[in-house]
Amino acid sequence: MEEIREEARAWWACQEYSRGGLPCRINHGTASNRISWDRTEEEVRSRREELLVLSADGLREIRHPYSTVARLAFADLAGLAGCPPLSEQALRSIVGSMRLALQVEQPSSARSAPSPKRGLGAPRDRGVFEGALAALLLLARSEGPGLVPFLHVVIPPIGKRLLLRGHREPTLDVLRELASVCGPGAEAVMRSRGVVL
Image (cartoon, rainbow, N blue to C red; front, side, top):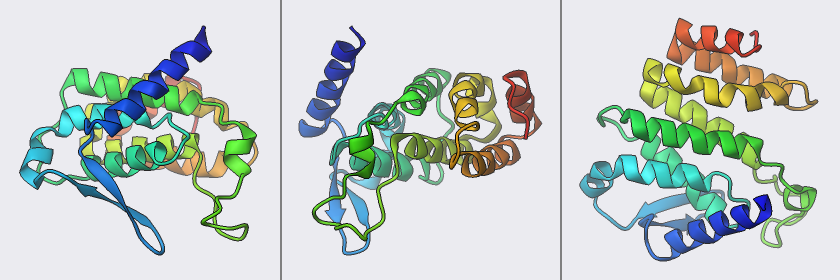
């Protein structure tokens, strides 16, 4: 049943991107990819909340171009300067999508198979967990202490990764910065969920 639900969600994300629900495209560079928006900056700014929710839902995606578009669009939207704070409903939806992304078990073939374009010696793409963790940090930087009431949703899946080799130090670094950006309330939420910095 869960596989059917996940396939339906993946199909929806693909359809949403294909039909222009997320009005951007990838500009493939020689060293990195960027997003180009198909709308003016004012229009993107006015739809920021809706587009962030859609991008957050795409953070679970493991297929290119959907995973790349979701991560890059989320980063652009979270970093827009001069925007009002997100509504409680939008934050709840975004953080819920991040929790699902933090729980994705990426198949080993998706993590280790080199891209024909990158070759064997090129750096691997970040996994779903790392992408969701980076998105959480971007959201914390833009929303600050306003994110604290929603942190209890994402701390448990992050805490589980603290026990895995290779994840502990990078995850602790993100949690420390999260506590710094969101204030003492964030540390209290982490402690209440069993995560001690």
